[in-house]
Amino acid sequence: MRRATQARWWLLLGLLLCLPFAQARSEYTHDAAAISTIAVAALPPEARDTLQLIKSNGPFPYPRDGVVFGNYERILPEQARGYYHEYTVKTPGVRHRGARRIVCGLVPECYYSPDHYRTFKRIREDN
Image (cartoon, rainbow, N blue to C red; front, top):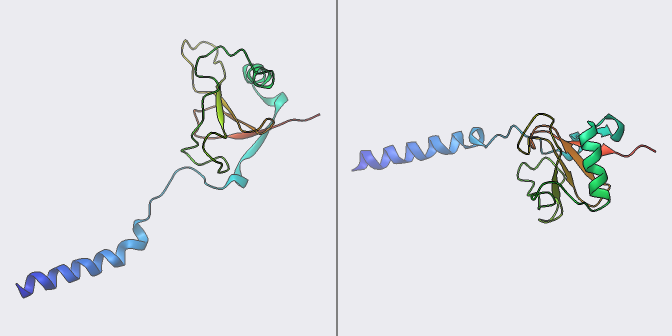
């Protein structure tokens, strides 16, 4: 019995010593300042079309356009749920929605994702 208690204490001590090394790691950046920018003119033509639809409140070609974007990847600056909304950017040659999106908070705060939310670039309105 004493040996089992002693083994439990050693196990607990070992787990506590390993705890700092067991933190969850994420492949996503959590630093909103690290988000690069892209000029509207540098966007693909389909993204520019989607941005115009967003600014004029539609009509949007996909039923899911305008739904709340959850920011689960936590790449975009943290905001209250419901702040961000997502819109599909057509992908030539693809029959489904594809991977390209524009996510907007309060316009003109919009971000372009060419790869289904793995990366984002803040859309920069150049005059």
